[in-house]
Amino acid sequence: NSEVTLMVFSRILKYLDYHFFSRHRRGHGIHSPFVFDLVSRVFRNKTDPEVVLMIERIRKELLCDKRTIRVLDLGSGSALMKSDLRRISDIAKYTSVPAKYGVLLANLAAEFGRQGIVEFGTSLGISTMYMASAYRDSRVFTMEGCPEISTVASDSFRRAGFGNITLMTGSFDDLLPKVKSKVSYPGLVFIDGNHRKEPVLRYFSEMVEVSGNKTVIVIDDIHSSDEMEEAWNEIKANENVSFTIDLYRMGLVFFRKGMSRFDYVIRY
Image 1: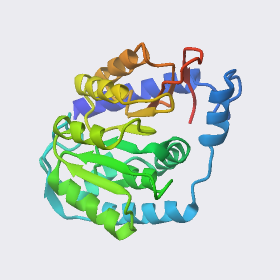
Image 2: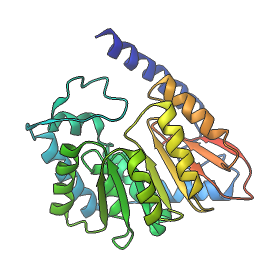
Image 3: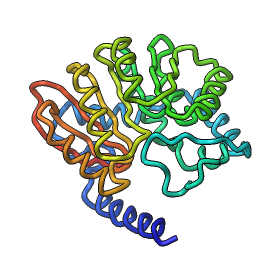
Image 4: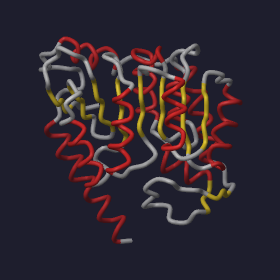
């Protein structure tokens, strides 16, 4: 329909803008030693291929799963899936992070996630498993609003043997106090699952309250809509933020005291 066509066209224009103005994927031209090391080493790390194969095998099974479940959507909803009755295969196709970004989340979890990981929006659990794979003794607290999606994700975690994932079902606002009581100063936070400006800014503020100098907050789909771009711009301007990295799909937020304030745009 016309709404989806306009959305796709807008994303193409935004991506072209990002492509032409982003810095080199190998870190060339970046003067900050910390950011150069992050881009040249962490972004390009190779995640254990066996882990990637296992998670991608589960993704493939989900993409072939034609069962229909009733989706309770507490977030912004989907522009591509309007009905609350959805096939698991469609949810896997349209909401799970691609393998490329799953590997990035695993690398970030390996570098920063030892003190604990918090995820807003489990969906079918692909991103959760990538982050949980970095350190099996690091706890991942992940929140999902839909009970039936949560059940599917829980089954995937069990079959994959991840014992370090705590899956919580309900609204993020109701679950957040419990999460914050369980993990102080998380190393990595992944905000996904509600792509609207006001909730994203609220969740970000909640996480800033418990973020330490080494916490990294990752926000998904920062250019998916005008609303999300507005949220991203407000986050970049937050007084607690030391620097940000825009990877087009995801935005990374850092709180490193003493580092030069800058907003990087880097090709990934």
